[in-house]
Image (tube, rainbow, N blue to C red; front, top):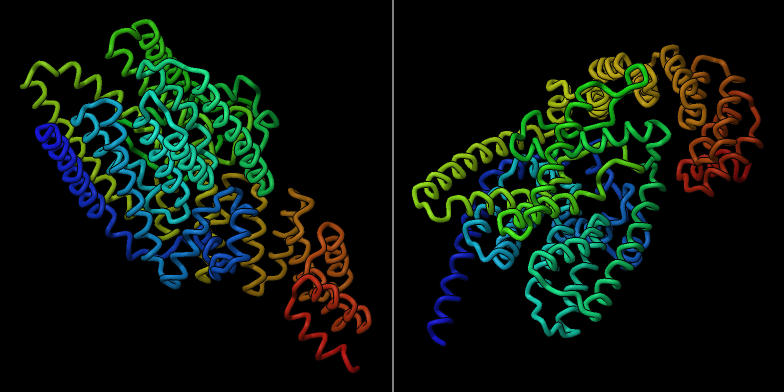
Length: 572
């Protein structure tokens, strides 16, 4: 008995030593990011300018669980933002530290999950190592806004580890912890809906049999999965993040895009070069996709087909079974982010590889381990090769973090790498937004103009360039750009409001009134009513009409309208 306890203690010590080493390496790679500010014009500022996050209280906590944030249902990550902001007010460093710590927790969970699943300390340790340092994971750790990715992964892996520790006599108490961690994962990010599929995969891999009780337990998980899929679709639809791909691409083109994305993910697992924060759907060229998309898709289809064929055909052999398990883990965890019917504006994202690459890494290492198991020299060579590979990845991740210092460096990286026309246009537009925030009008106009040159129908770029012209006093150019915006997107309310303001500045009061009327007809807003009231009062000399509009603006929450009412309307 004491002998067994000693062995267990020794193994546990190994796990903790390995984890501490990997965590130390992780901090070395990511320590430089602690001095970075938040990413303005790229989600971070949207979270931390939200009063519901800045002010932690009961009603706001209730809103976290009953509202969507940036097109996602993610109450627990939003709560974590609020808690950290409450404990460390306006500390970007604290928010970044939490991300790094969550990544370290996930490293430990990867070790424990793979160790329990395979019984192989070599495979679990090196899988955790590559998970810790892979350059494709930099986005998940360094970008504060991807907290949801780290949190859902932690609960996801905790639920999987609990599931792996269930014995044949699954008590309600033990299963309740599996269920609890799954629910927490779902409340962190809807992407966690793939976990029941992974449970079934593990069930097959371990040779377990499905009993009536097990089927019922899985059924409850899949029902919960269906509910959260609906919530996720509703959240993205409400924010305008999700679109029906059939409106732009044929079924065959969607098939190609699907396998192109899969091919890029597989390729960048081994060779993570030309990384980018933006991967967009391509512009159609003469009605078709660019040629490289067909090439990548064909290669991905062939590679996937071969892996699946080998795995199914030779599944009784352990090496083939390991390969199939790892690849299916990769496919299942990646599935809900893949483009086919519905999709967000991006075709793929590096943060989406965070969990899926665990499967690919484990599959590759299990194969390599089985081939070198009986040859100590080959095992030593494999270990040295993996360590060299890890060193290269560590340096690459360290350097990749430098790109995330601020929006100028981040989007400049996309422009410099020439990933694609769509990516370059969006990167120029986003960098232009940062220049606009920094009041660098010349650079902002230059970037917006370059984005428009690549994509002449880029109405947001026209609109923002118009704002720069307006703010610098060039009302004529502003009117031209706002008009182009409206010509492309006829229901762009803010373009009508700002063109109305530019018309007012140039003395075209009737045209200004016409634009503000259209804006109010499209979507009544405090700014539109406020602006029309000022126009009525100052230019049309109609104080009654002005006061009427300011009342409406005040009802919509305008503090400026309240001041104008006190000054010009009440007591007159």
